[in-house]
Amino acid sequence: MPWFPAWGIKFDSEIIDFKEILSSFNELRPDEKWFLLAFEVAASEKHLWTAWYSMKRNQKKQIMVANSPDAEFLRIISGTHQVRIAFENAGIRNNDHAAWIVRLPEIEISENIDENLINREIYNIYELEANNLIERMNGSLIPQRPKPTLEGLKRIKYEYEINEEKSLEECFLLHLISSNV
Image (cartoon, rainbow, N blue to C red; front, top):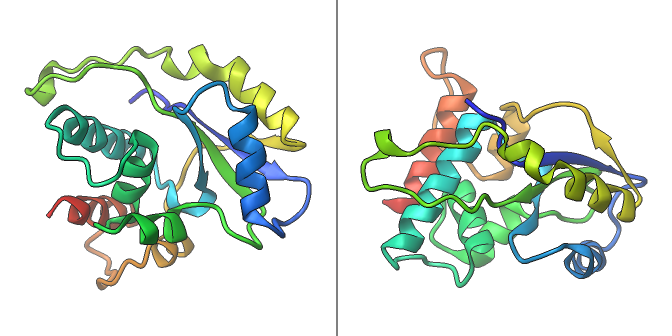
């Protein structure tokens, strides 16, 4: 599975005023397809691509709950129908030390999921812009890809039992699916 266009950013210090960070990021970003995602809530490439596909499907069917693709993506990652809760759970907040800088890919989707092709270079296409954003935000690149954690499940308010039969990634995916139920 190709890397989703997301880059970990470690801030030079813990976030004191997340609204100030968001305002600064929104001024610096090249377009509205770039946004910040809480670091813990990204579980894997599969998790991010599934959230993106759900967002694109909702957008194509004109059934998005949120008013913008980035907010819809956050809502789906959070496994909720409420946009306000999505920002609280999946957005950055005070005391965070890191986040993901995400660029929503501009790929059209087909109704038949098996017909959808993803350019394996999608991550590389936006890497220069992402690194520029990281530098301008006075952060540093975190050299790791998303991984599922218990902290991430807690942050998105996962309420189901975690047992040996389900992997942490499966828990994230099940929670994501609940946003569309």
